Length: 61
Length: 415
Image (cartoon, rainbow over all chains, first blue to last red; front, side, top):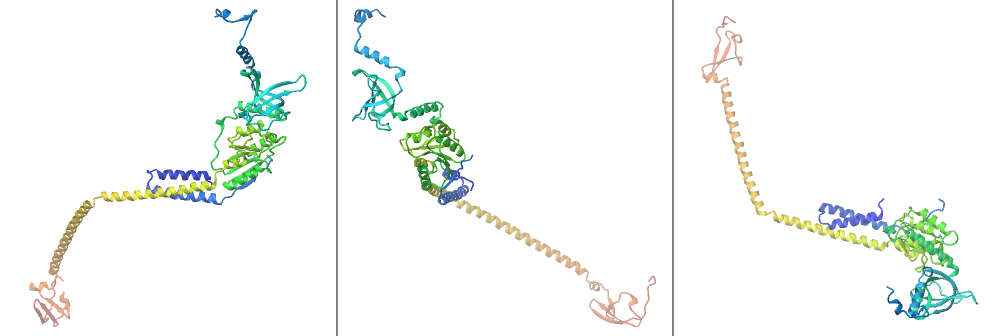
């Protein structure tokens, strides 16, 4: 969960590109598809459940 | 060079007679002086006319009575549209422009490019000077602008805790994207506000992914701290990308030029700072769909490949090979069977031999050769010691038995 949303989305895009590339073996295609499906879910969960939060910096240095 | 000059130039009593255009040209060249160009002039507006064409014509006067001075002014439509106030006769103004000659009418005019009410004039001049200095230092170079992060987790806001700008930013972000907003509170107007803004920027730099610096709309005076070089330099020197959002669409402050992005309002800044949740969800759904379609087509392609290979394996050839193997297997089986059979026969022969050998060992076989066995009391008598004179013995011969009586016993001498 230390991964940032952007990193997850970037990995997802890479997976789609890799699936588009015909050189990937079937086994690998299935493996990265599963990884991709997990990422989609994680991203959706993150977006779906999180709420905006407000904090304030103190003025003291 | 001067050969023709004397005969063609008319003169009267030694003084050359000039054409009107020549005099006008001289005036033009005399007025074409740096000290009359791009200058600020302070004066009172008079004879102000807002022409239907959109151009403004007026005069600037100084003092009244005998020592008064007057300059005719024109402000063309494109510049007049930038006016932030409506000039009126009697208004003290500060005008920026150049003196130009209009030869067809033999008039010179002050062509005004920018004009402000003079009470603020001093401050406008100050901003103008700061702008030139900061620009000369390269702080407004568009090449310095950095891209904003696509998916910020934390958004810093440098503004007033109580202002409308903060509320606008919060409402936009909460609607669009689940990010954390970190407020670095500061006064946004008044004396010393620029020091607080500068501090607030430095305090939050590095703690967030992007910073919005700004405030809602207000007068030139209200927005003034955002022109201060300290604020501009803090924005330019910020390690975190900065969105500047000072006032409304029409307002600009110098910190806008130093920021990585200038937003027309705080709400617009918030919109630029975060992506929209629904749009991201749409992209995610698109990714999922695309992945599934790709995997399906990949599976279909693999299936086709297997079918193709199966076809290329030539079933007939395979059947023939299987047949060959079966045949050889059958041959081997026969060989094995034969081998097993001959072994049995060998074993049988060996057994017959042993049986023959055993037959030789049969004790009764000796009877055939004329020997006889003597039995006394049912036991075989091996020694004359087993007998006694007058005792009865049985004689067993090849073809029967006989009963006899022992007459005499003689031991061999050497026993």
